[in-house]
Image (cartoon, rainbow, N blue to C red; front, side):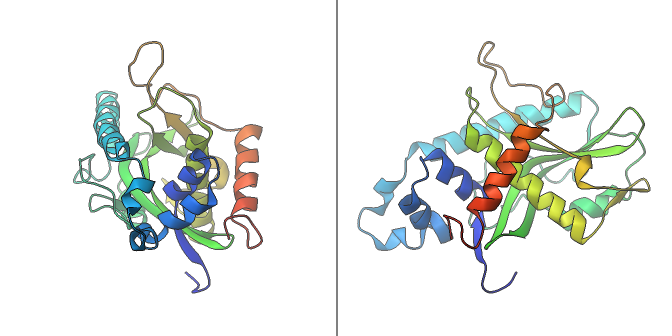
Amino acid sequence: MPESLVSIRVTEIGEFISHQSCERRFKLNMDDMALARSLPFFDRLFNPLDLVLQQSGRQKEKEWEEELKQAGVVNLTPSKSPTNKPSSSECRKDATEWVDFVSHLRNLDSKQPAYAYNVCVSADVGAFHVKGEMDFLMVLWDQNGAARLRIVECKASRRDRTYHRIQVALYHMILCELLKENPVAICGKILKSADVDRVVVRIDESTNNIQSILGLQPLNGADVDQLEEDITHLLATEGRLK
């Protein structure tokens, strides 16, 4: 990472959108709230319900992982699974490093669907070094037997929100950059950006149950392409966040 690039997390960008593009809150939230901690009563700037929501999110992630196991999707890194550990300024202790995920792909059987939990990735995007952890990264197979990756962003929410799609779009941009810099092959096929899908799963409003990761259609198409274009402008050297 070049020294001139500021390091930020995918979740910080998502929260910027979620809180009506509040530049002040974004600035105070950076570097594990280093600047905010210098202010009196800084803890009042942030909602105490955030920790409760994180705990609820971890529980739902366990339910989504159980769905994958029941469907015969194998865990590439079985020592990594959803826990109740809090997030930190870096990748969580239970995270799967991208290089570890790639190394496990060498032993994957053809047409065997698989997943890894909490995959830690980072890349330079515009004026920033963007990092974060994908809730699940899956290997699936199309009708021709070719491997595809699926980024899964899990939300313990009943409502579809723009910042949910912003986060999964950011992970897609990071992943495509990683694949471009260091090509990855699965069963002899070199993965391209067109081989990466993205989905956001949440709680179904009508049933109050979790949506199915495997049953959702990927968020591909013009709408998501537009989101990525907007993100590119937002993170540019002359962009708003810089």
